[in-house]
Every structure is written in structure tokens, then in C-alpha cells.
Image 1 (cartoon, rainbow, N blue to C red):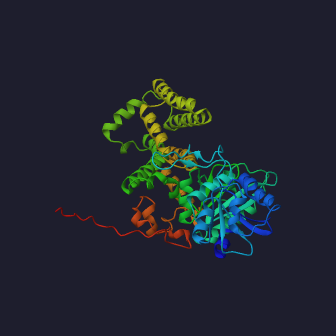
Image 2 (spheres, rainbow, N blue to C red; image 1 turned 90 degrees about the vertical axis):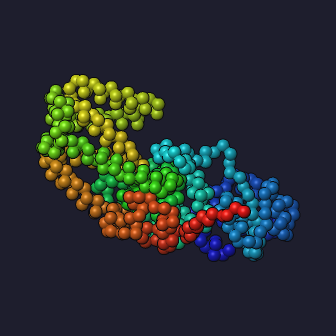
Image 3 (tube, rainbow, N blue to C red; image 1 turned 180 degrees about the vertical axis):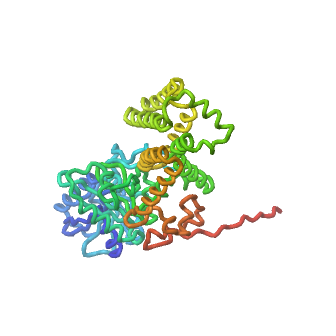
Length: 486
């Protein structure tokens, strides 16, 4: 039990207090994020202190008669005590006797919002539990899923004016301590007045601030954070924010969806490849249109060349202005739809897209083929599960459009070259951003472009340099034997 306390006491939400009751000194320990604090004060501490004036506490079993709680259990088994403590119970024992413990169950407060439905990371299959704005509630949600004493929570205060509570969460014995120390040092070095959201911390502690790519994965889903912790990453959240950021993150993490792991691995791999293809199409479709229609008519098949010329014969603008007009219009619709109420925003996006697209074609401002390409490009950008990465793809389309309008296909190659060089220079907590491609890690490629079967995904990524490389031991595949019927 002493070793257990050493591990658990690393967490900031682990509390241990001493209460004098009936001539005895009781040691009471609990996780503040898992219990009802009001019930602890009223039904446990005050009851013990009030009864101390009338009688003496001779045995630990007498606590059952001293407090107005029915669910009180006396145990000396370390496994039971650990499990109950992590489930939200209060553990009481005599300070001079560490052999028996009273396990007091305290229910959570009814009527308090315990979780939030995920809105920006919706999935059809799997849990939909999201985080809320309360830091204690969010840590409690994590502990209810990761029910092990190795889950460590370190809390610090940031903001010279706000004094915002920020929690660093990791699994002791799995996560590399260098990542924890790096994040802790960067957070403590922040000198800012008010911290409103975890997204601000993302910008403060990133390895490189001059990049459109997010270097920490931001998520509101509990299952995604739990998966990141189990693979050896570190999670950070601030009080008042429903979003965790996890790192070190790689480029491929932003195209993985928790839904991939709830479906058979063949379907999960197929949908992941669809998302990656959608991002590539969204990034290069309109710039390729400009390059082909401006410099490289010869690559267009003859059967397609006539409809393309026919669709552009009344357009008075060059392809660059034509594309920019539609792309900026799509961005206007996106921003307007995001700022309006949900039902109005959906209506605006659908009706506005149809009306504006049809009107621009009839007015001769754009070609109907370009409207189709821009519409497909906009749809493909929505396939990215993480909103911040989707914004980065939206932004990068415009430099690619300008490069292709100046040099054609050569401009696209130059843009791709600059993009690849920039990606190779990015790091997240010192981990290369495009690993396992550069540097090449053959073993880690199996969970990048495709989602492997659970039988082959039992090891953590090698580039995270975790203290424990094995997540679980896959069982042997048993062949089904046909039983002969007598």
C-alpha cells in the first residue's frame, strides 16, 4: 500500500488529510476529481468530528455507525482499496495502523453536467462522450476510463491575472519523462495575463510558431485523449476549456479518426485512405485546373477539351481570377455558416452554394466545370477529422493557386517542394512531424496510411520512445473446428 501511495501521490488531484475523531487520528485520502466534495465535508468529516465529542472510536468498524452513509466497507486487500479509490471512494484508516481501511462510497452530485456530446468531432459508431469546461470534471472523465493508479495529473497555475489551472496528464511507466518535463518547463515559462482556452497554450508551447500546421492535436473526444495517453503521449488542458491538446503529434495523427478503430480494420483502412486522398485533392485540384487551362492545354484529352472550351467561352476573366472568385465565395459561405446558429447556418450553406453557383455560371463569371471542381474540393476538405488541420489545408490552397498561375505545373512542383521541406523541418516536442516517413520507420508505417488489425497493433510507436513498448498481448488466433454431430 505504501508503494501505491507513492505512485498515486504524484497526481495533483490526490488529497490526503488528517481528521481527529474519538481520540484517534484518521488518515482520509481521495481523488478530488472523482468525489462529491460537499458530501465529504458534511457526511464524513463533520460527522466524525461531531461524534468525537460524545464517544471514542475504538475500532475502524465503528465508522459505519458514525457517518450517515450506508455503503461503507472494511477491507485489508490492496487490490480492492486501489480499485475503489480510483472509482471515486474515500479511504480512511488509523494513522498508526496501516493494515485495515474503511472504504466510503460518495455519490457524485446529481444535476451537474458530467460530459458533453461531441459536436466538432462527430462519429456514427463509438462513444460520443466529450469534455466540458470544468477541469475537475474532465479529469474525472479520464479517470473513469483509464482506471489505473499510474495516471498522473500535474497541475500548475498560468496567467498573471487569471491564475488559470492547467493540468498535465500522462501515464507513469509509459510516457517518456522528457516530454513531460519539456511541456512543464514551457508552460511554467509562459508570462501572459489571461488564459482563455487550451488553444492558446498550443501556440505558446509549440516547437515552431511560424507554420500553418498544428503541432499539437486538439480534441474534445474522451476516447481520442485516452488513446493518446495509452500510446505514450502527454495531454494538456486548462480550466474553462473543453479541449485537450496531446503531443508529440505527427501529421498522420490528424487524419486518423476514432471511428477507424470501431470498424473492421479493412473498412477503417479504406475510410482513412479516402480521407488522405480527399486532402490531396482539396489541396491541388484548383491549382491543377489553373495550370492546365493556362499553360498545358495539350495534356487535356480531345474529348474533354471541347466541353472545357465551350464552358469558358463567355468567361471574361483569366483562370486565376475565376478560381479566386469561387474560392473566396466558398470561404465566405463557410465563415458565415460557422458564425450563425446551426439550423440557419446549414440552410445558408446549402441555399447559398446552389444559388451563387448557378448565378455565376449563368452570368458568365465562371465555368460550370470549375464550379464542380471547387465544390468537390470544398467537400474533400471536410473529410479531415481535426478542424485545425482542415484550416491549414484551406489556407495552403491559395499559395498553390498563385504558384500554378505564374509557372504552371512547374509552379505546383515548386510549391510541393517548399511544402515538403517545411514539413521535414517541423517537430512536435522534438519528434519529427512526418515520422514514420522521414525518418523512415518501417514498423510504424502499419498504422499510418492503413489501420492494422488488433493482432498487429499491440506495440506502441517506436518514435515516441516510450518506457513500455507493449500495450497488450494479442491472443493466438484460434481456428474454428467443426464438431461432428452424432
